[in-house]
Length: 279
Image (cartoon, helix red, strand yellow):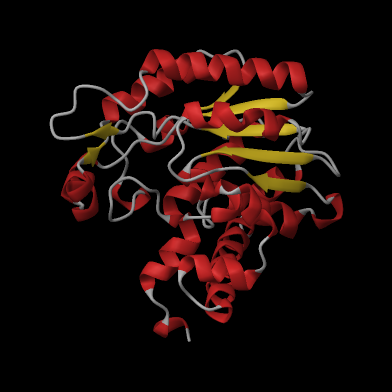
């Protein structure tokens, strides 16, 4: 069955989630959601199951390292707490660092019943995150893990002279998001710098060429520099990815992390939340 699945369907289910974009879609059953993707419910559920198993296997592999498993035991999330991940496709992805984190906690600390809510939405900028953040805050999370900014750095059109959201506006959006979080929740806030990309691979990707969209690491690094100056806890993913992402960390489109890239992100997150890397 797996070999017969359309790779484009797998990518759609992995990265696009209409139940997050359309309020009414949160109440649709599997048959209706499958129809939105243009597939039957059995295919939809099979793809979701395969992706869930892949991310669970990844978490299990990480936990085979006893030192890492001990760190997961010592993550500061307490029993019955709620952890929300806020971001774009790098979080929304069903194979993302956030989904790996979910399975790490389910496998290693099932008795703690820590609730993880993935509020990443593919394609969203910090402006769109701000627009829906009051609803996120209303969930009263104990922790909010942010990874935003990559789509702010998107450039549209040939020889683009500006990013989709200016650095100054990104900073203002982040300030307002932090203000809402501070006034409407009692959550701990963790900001993660957006990962860098492979510019050469991105420039050669046919879909991006046709759509005339592009990214520059200089823009992404500038957003990271702004985030590093926040007074909240910051996990600097850019230190792990470098000024240009390693080839193994980035997929064929040059922009979205591979499972290896997501493993690197979640490993860094776990290390930094448990005192940093030993040695």
